Image (cartoon, each protein chain N blue to C red):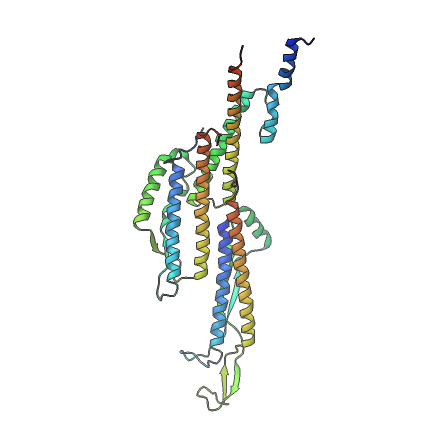
Length: 133
Length: 106
Length: 147
């Protein structure tokens, strides 16, 4: 029987924190691309998160791996901070409407993650306050 | 003249048997009425645990990108919250009833 | 179906309309060009759309099972098979033996009409995109509004 993931430092919080960092990096890439839309020979950028995270995807549902997931997520966060943006191989030039679509998707993802994390912590708050709040 | 014992007996009987907890369950829509309140409560606690674990897994999948179904995640979280709240309130009421009982002058 | 495939489809639609706009602009700019730098006459272009969509039931099953993200429209720029406009200008350096100069068969009126259609289609795609985004934002409000 699994238990409520510890709110502080658990695997879920770590993954959400990593995903939020990635959303900020994606936003920086989109902002750079839009600002340089008219610059000749400009190579569009993307966040490096998507390359890193595919190897985590299969493991998140297996709770026995939580310790390793926390370690891997933490190291990914650090590596994301040191070099967040790389050249986007699939986009030879900036397409403004694709960038706007990415912007909307990214904003939505960020807000969804924040809301979901807030609700999870609300569960713990309910227990701590004994339902009297 | 009213017999004092029977005057006390009437309000006690009107409280009803423990099985009236069944109305709580139909509101939750979970299981058929059980004969034992303790069993029901244990089942609800297990149910809460399952719901919380499921909501937690879905939030993880949202974070890494395998599940982008936002409303499903929100609904699971809300179900978990409501189940937990139900169990909390039942627990509070039971404790309150117990404390009331203990304060009764014998 | 997830929300990001909805965004991808609308974005592909917007991309396609922008391609159409570029092609129309190119055609209108070259309406009086006799020949290009390579010596060949300018051929009017058009965007041919081959949708990634398969028959309806395949699409329906895809919606209920997986995502539709592979099925946005894909446009190819190809030359239009329009006969050139012949104008009698015997003094023109590109005139042929009979004194006729071949201009590209670009019809400015139909290009302008196409521009209007492209604008409306682009707006429609943006509206779909915004509607999808509003719905997803509302989904985030599930369970809020409680103290």
